[in-house]
Figure 1 (tube, rainbow, N blue to C red):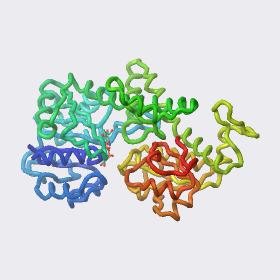
Figure 2: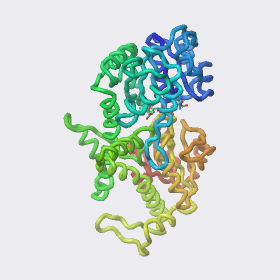
Figure 3: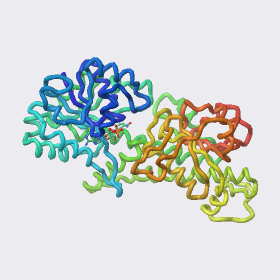
Length: 463
Ligand SMILES: NC(=O)c1ccc[n+]([C@@H]2O[C@H](COP(=O)([O-])OP(=O)(O)OC[C@H]3O[C@@H](n4cnc5c(N)ncnc54)[C@H](O)[C@@H]3O)[C@@H](O)[C@H]2O)c1
């Protein structure tokens, strides 16, 4: 079997490798010529994907990459002399400026495929999106551009990706794959393809159900993270450590699943997908109040963390003590409005944000809350730098062009001890936290990582 996978990023590349490993010949298509030539030369541009395996599969003729979409219908393409049986689409689904779904990548891909689409081929959308995208928007561009009909001339399906980047125990082959077909025959065609590479298939009623299942999974995560983020502040005001509470609660063998607080939400999925759902819900006259409230709480986290940083610095400077919400605490002599007070505490301080990637042990900094933290700290007068062993330099992006070109500081005693405070935003395993405890004068920890290390009293503030 030959297949094509379009979009060779965090989702598409591991999928290519899994199919190729399973004996399927894979044509990887992308509009980014640099990625295509890197792959054909056996190089990886994603840190947790080994170059050695790419090289092995390319050499074995199992995998090749191209920018030429005509190869999906070409009987003499780089991967063999038959047209591909299936085309899997793994391109980005971001938001527009007004937070409406941006389907332009999916629709552009559909337009690029359509002129080359052959009778009997299967097209599967894997990108996360709102229910209805596959059978409405994507189907329309494919049918218009090819003159063929979905369900009659070609098969169409949706199968969401469940990639867990950086988790060594999460193998594409072992993660059950939800699949919804446009027709029962489309579903059967999709099952046949995925059965080659994935152990457990989960067929569902239609494309809409599969699209909705993916949104439920991600919204579930966002809502539960919001709950523990809220409880963090509530319990802190009662002098209770939320991390101890979660550790206790997770011993319940049924009906509880632990989620952990943090400095906000990041990545290409959890902060974005709720907007896809909310947008589609509005179209059908429904509200998503619960989901929106969770988003509000999560988006407020960077502000809260920065307030905590200001509090820690002020307490350290000892020249003004913040008003504590705990009963009986001494009030400051001069009350200042919260933001003004933070400016005073943060002005001209040197703050190091530790961890720029949105989650531990990956090099993906998309939508990372570390950027929101750096922006807020800078706006309140702090001099901000970052350290991230996985992100040595910030690439130019649409999201945060003003940080492009900034480089991670070096990790040594002289540099780390020169910062007034280190704010742990993402706790990569590759960081030596005992050295951090020894070198840094003050630490704000949003990930509860410092509890495992020997630290001088009063040095670590949880946030
Ligand atoms: N990253 C994750 O952990 C994850 C997990 C589950 C689902 N998803 C979903 O998977 C989809 C892809 O995400 P990703 O993280 O792999 O994105 P990515 O940005 O890492 O990769 C997307 C790739 O698509 C390419 N591309 C863009 N437009 C194209 C076009 N018209 N034709 C061909 N290639 C094109 C880009 O050059 C890029 O290489 C998104 O919908 C995302 O929500 C991502």
